Length: 481
Image (cartoon, rainbow, N blue to C red; front, side):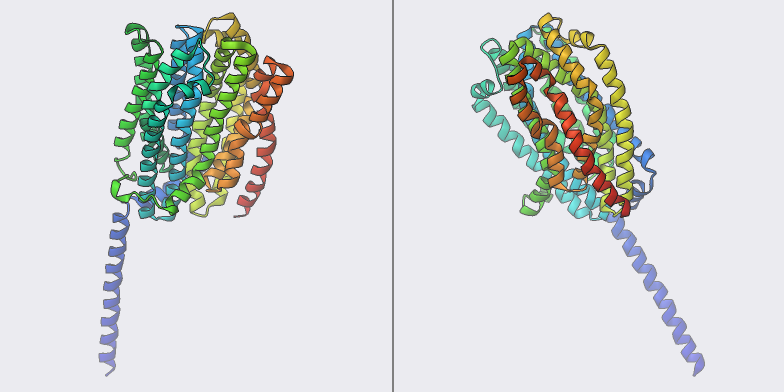
């Protein structure tokens, strides 16, 4: 009797072991089917030391941002060889390009932040649907901008501040830029989604391909084919199309989330998440466009087309200086989103402090160089005494407080990556909206052209004074998590 019982118990245990092996194999199969090396990605994003992880992710994005800034400056440089009016026209259209970028970044950052948090939680189905929805929404928005913008082209040119002298160049440049809007919004979405998955290298290759195309086409179309500002616009759009194609191909490689028509879900849930995490980018970029518009209007009123050209050059130069910081922050964003989704608040905090420290050091160094060599920097783009006079003053003021962008930008990126839409919207709105817009209206009325030249510097000081306390409170909370 005892022998029988022992045999039955052995049989049951043996059966349990077989069942457990089967279940383990089934679970392993499910994990592989849900994303292949999901565990490897999760381990990489949550266990790699923060300085090493951010550096690995940031280097490609820094290179991408620097190259993007170079080809943005390339238009200004080559157009500057044509005339002061052409330089002013490109600066005027920049506000429209900023709006297009704002829409693309809103869809890209909104969908990218959410899909990264879903990857941190291990929900690949939700991540796939969000990637597809964000991409589809960006294309729809881009087509709408292209159609409506060209239907109301002349009123739009007047709205951005085109004078009778610059109207023809502004119209020619803007028409082509608007046609390329769907490719711009689409490539911004794919770029952001790739970064948020930790695939910064694919994102870098896509942007660099477009940048190289733009820089190569600029002199060819402007001077060889004698297309003037239209050639500059064609070069810009051509570069955006190449970036779109390369990024789309890159998004289909390896472990990357694959956007597909069948996964598009334009429903309230996904749209709400895109808006929640994407609205800070829309505010930041959209207000930058509004700020540029008001800046050009004030510059034109107090200094004419030469002042517009001078401020446009300074804007491009400062964007170039800040591009490395933004690339650094974009390396931090997937780390913040992924680890926040994985309930690892201390890693989010550590990454923020790391980025602010080295971002401040970098910006202080390049800001000092801009203060010292301001005349040479402005003259490089347009050797016109009236343009240089305005540019020197504005560049020195902005460069002297450039280092404050580190805490301002990183605070915004931290809140946005954590999905805290309201406070992220506030921090993203300060520099180009909450402070800049009232200042650009008030200061020129009191100080004339000097007020135009110093507005951005004053806005940066006030923005940092607000962003730092907000960041300190959140860092204290993350330290306790």
